[in-house]
Length: 479
Image (cartoon, rainbow, N blue to C red; front, side):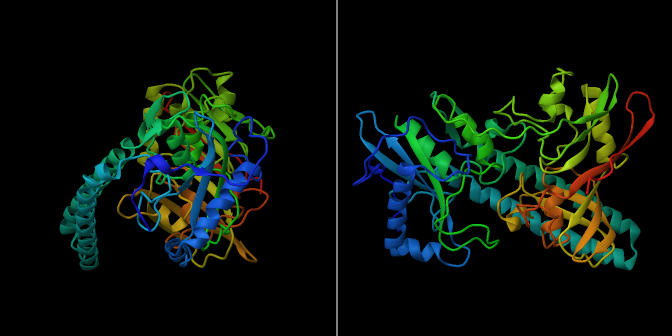
């Protein structure tokens, strides 16, 4: 497998194919099959993947398959052909002959990445040693020494988290994302103020569009497909076509497509609106319905969401007003601060466990224990692979206490009380083998799709930052 990319020879000709060219690019998030030009280009790439032994060896080992993409383009002089891309790396290489390059400079990354990895590995080793020392002192009942070790352990955890965030920030600042207008942003700025999820910018579609824009090629048709052995979770099939992913490309592609004629996505059913439970000059409490996103997204500021619905009546609200974000597929209670002082007070209450945000769920499987605490370091956002979501080196610590409410047949009703609130965390806490080991019912990502995700924020309690009154809200789960 050759790894040097000659950028002057990346447009492959579509032989023996005629027909009218697409008037505009199909929406990449639409799950419909690709059009005839995209299918023809994909078949040409698939033929290459079948023929080259190095690709067969890399892609057909267990779990070795990956997403590929093709983009039919028109050159300024009128020549029509297609570009090819793969997601992430192919056989350990970012640059492979015949495929478009990544959105960052691998040489520049190699100048700082190994040193950063080594520092994090040393901190992880130090953390593990302190954990063992603390466990031994706890067993011996040496309280003064234990407090000292726990303080050192907390310091190491803080340093490790800061170093991990700094390294990830440096990585994401190296991605240059262009759009059809000729503008560019870094990956970090696209997702700000949150860190980008791992793998953002490495999917096939962003690579293809970026190369086309840099070379002044006009995108005409896009197709993305899985090729090779299925992933370990079995949720991909070789030769099957898939729309662009939402968790990574949902922010990147809308920006890249600005200035390009793209088909509108199909109209979606209008979800019910949030139910306002409490309103005063300082805060709001709402009950979010299933199917409505909490926030619209940075590059789709008018997309239907709790925030957009509330802004019609409370125009001062922004995404920062929300103390938590619930999955679109889940439902339940949310508290929203109307000023910075109120937000800071509520944040402090949740961080110090003086406030409570309780969730109830059905999980697909029987949980043996009656209660416990899940403590997992998660990456900045959920990945397609459940195992990759937990990262002891780069992850951010997340915690949730859980209690079994009842068991029925092959499922368990569980109460979760998280002390940290990253999006998707409870779904990972339930599904991951280091958590409950059973997915939340209806979780199409980590389990089996059903009528809805059986996760609901049913209780919320906190002290009002201005009045001092303790407020308690309840929303019975609709399942």
